[in-house]
Image: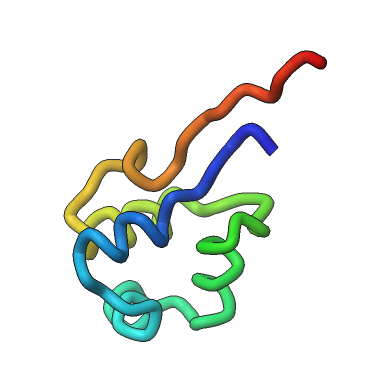
Length: 71
């Protein structure tokens, strides 16, 4: 998939655990885990906003577009 989720990178930079992020954002551990592992098919803007607020980052710090190679 050409969209890469770098949530784990931002969490490591902020020294924040998935449990802490879950509590501060108000999402379940399972939903955050799905997002963190890149298995999510979508994300609500309100969720992205809450994650960015808690991690003090921009959406581009979490989501990255990586084009697939044309082989």
